[in-house]
Image (cartoon, rainbow, N blue to C red; front, side, top):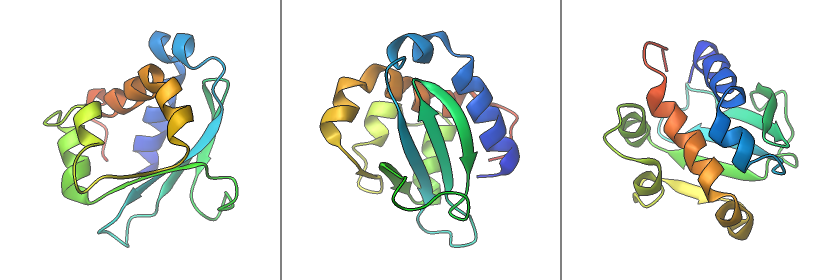
Length: 127
């Protein structure tokens, strides 16, 4: 996931009406991992009250800050980016691993689902 991609993603996140409405009380730190590509650094995104306030890599965040880890191999991420797999279905794929407080995620599922959908909507941005 390139710097160009994460910049576009966080901008799209911060300008999305659904996320703004559904996650206005939600704060967390997410780590997105491409599990079969050691050459691709995990991306970490920090959300405060529904707004992406910062992003970076492992060097810029401590493991203690990360609340959720979403991991999949490159082919499963590609299915999301290419809209072959929806947000809900992606989380059920054998290749996707979701770690973090499930109850918190479930109580914010509408906004979090929208966050994954945004990934597929970012056409023309190099992943």
